Amino acid sequence: MKEVDYKQLLEQKGLKKTKVRMTLIRHFVHLDHAQSYSDLQAALVKELDKSTLYRNLTSFEQAGIIHRINDHSGVAKYAFGESPIEGDDHAHFVCECCETVYCMETPAPGEFNVPEGFKTNKVQTIIRGICADC
Amino acid sequence: MKEVDYKQLLEQKGLKKTKVRMTLIRHFVHLDHAQSYSDLQAALVKELDKSTLYRNLTSFEQAGIIHRINDHSGVAKYAFGESPIEGDDHAHFVCECCETVYCMETPAPGEFNVPEGFKTNKVQTIIRGICADC
DNA sequence: TTGTAAATGCAACTCGGTTGCATTTATATT
DNA sequence: AATATAAATGCAACCGAGTTGCATTTACAA
Ligand SMILES: [Mn+2]
Ligand SMILES: [Mn+2]
Ligand SMILES: [Zn+2]
Ligand SMILES: [Zn+2]
Image: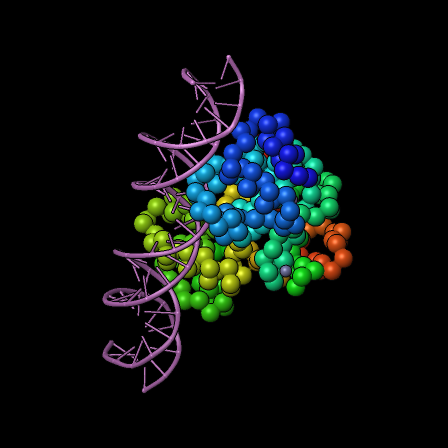
């Protein structure tokens, strides 16, 4: 995927092509693991404004450019690609050593046993373990 | 389970029997769904101090009296019983309508397919759907 | 080129959670 | 029962994630 494609991606989603957005996409697209707000802030040094960043993360998520992941750390992380909610459904791997979060190919498991009266819509899976780098 | 048992539970875990702790246990034990800090604050009106509450939640968790649950809301919730980490392992159900979190009998699924070099230790499962009350 | 809606930047705020410290309290020992 | 001691409490101050209102700037379509 190259520069011109990023631009296309944005206009296809009805989002204006701004400096911040291009920087963001460029960053996400070459990363193999999920990014938190502070990861992004640190990686994209150029004083990226906090609210602008958050607003763009939200826009991107709604547009399906990135998806939000909740490992159980308390802070949201984001990765490139369609949301697992109402998109393709996959599990996430959290390294217990380096805390890195990876998207897995692994699809969510099928049916679960829930009590009478409960209706399952979606199953979200976090796999905890040790990553290949650790 | 009755008053005298709560006291026993505490001393068995090496925790002093205090007013706050008895109130907390009494509350947790008769609840069928998980409680956040603000749930507790609201339910146990009697101006419960914030840090005292958090410190006790932590102590209780370490003692295995309650376990911490991370639905994907960003706030921690707690429920009575042993931690699923290094204790019995179960899934959690989050109602998409009322946001209530329930502990499920459902054990976590077996093996997952992870890439070469990754080692799975634990699988945590959140089931999203509609609860019996909604 | 210009008009307009959307995006940005900034400050101020909320809320969950933590920490240091002085005071109080539970409990073991005399 | 009196007392010593460690643990628990309460309070204030703090932190970091995330949000909001508002004035200014910018993308882009006419
Ligand atoms: Mn993912
Ligand atoms: Mn549970
Ligand atoms: Zn790792
Ligand atoms: Zn419900």
